[in-house]
Image 1 (spheres, rainbow, N blue to C red):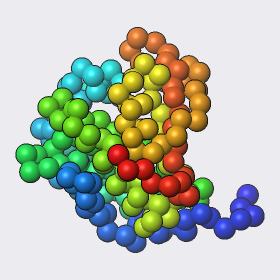
Image 2: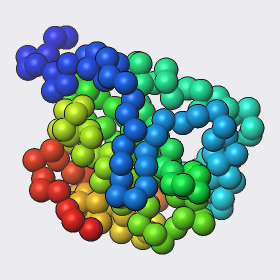
Image 3: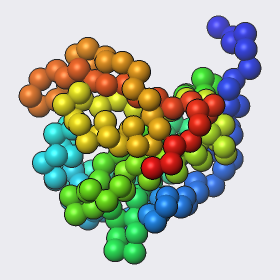
Image 4: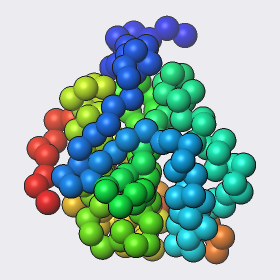
Length: 194
């Protein structure tokens, strides 16, 4: 069935772009590299990350996860960045559920234990949202987190993602179904200054 409105972002827009490195106020976002595998394994071995993201990875799965990001970029189905500084990988941030025609994406992130409490995630989220709105042309970016994940709620708010409501029983975790807070930012929202 054809759309009666033009796509918000034309198909092929993202695929024509080179995945950028992004400055994030003292940290840096860059595409994943094969030598980042130990950091990915450490992330998905961390109990807090496993709890909220409900994932574990073997070495082969971590390799495949890293290797799959360029394909997802070309297919305009997602994009992933390592969050780094001069000490190495601090965490990850990614676009998922990407719908260019609707101008919409969902973002997810995690930060390794040694980098927590330093504002890494809000800075990365702010930088990525800025690129998504100004370069890619998205209209809306969403994020959802368990209502029990208060740290993620703080990240969302610090990055200017307004709380929009609660999705009841939407996220399945090891301890059962969780209500999920929905946050979003629009291209027309005024950027925040942390």
